[in-house]
Image 1: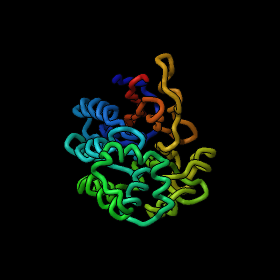
Image 2: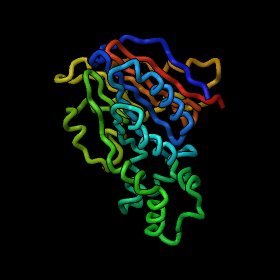
Image 3: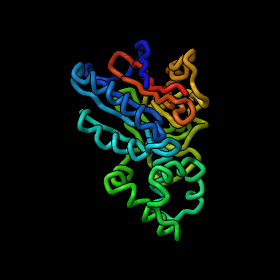
Length: 273
């Protein structure tokens, strides 16, 4: 595991002096990457009056340790002054699978990487006699603490000029309307699903001048990184957006960032494949 940090980039974050926000993009079951980023962030806590950790969602699926990633999120409050855990579309699907009866979502869950969680738990520990029994055994193996964590995720976190959200915002709706959508509304322009028109348009809200949307959801790298590649090129601020999805499931890289009153710095945890 290697950690690389970028230069410091200027950005009008609107944060108070002494307040640092550390954010981590889509992890997808790569608990070693997540742990390395958390260790690196925590090692510098004493340099700041307050450190807030924001997890942008999609901790689970595709990789080999979804449960380990949930555990890291749950225990993070022991090391950081404030922890904000956002709901990604993969957390939403997992919660729907365990709580609701929506066959269409059940099928999508497998396609989206839910099989990795089944493999992690072990087929021998799950009951496949019926869908109802499978859901009960799945929830049991996920465990009460992790299920409670899933049920208490936030849609977004707004502080200063920074808005943290899993997928993005909708330029055709107010922020209030956008975030009023139910957590289990899937696809389309939902806050944990949207791609277009968010990605196509600069961030511009009349009542929120100078806003930067820090998000994940859309992988910036879909193939394995090579040692000669620039890890930071795809994660620069542009048009009011900063994308921290490093495509971990394919690239071998989980991307994070640190924000202060002066700007931001990128941090990448990578195992070269």
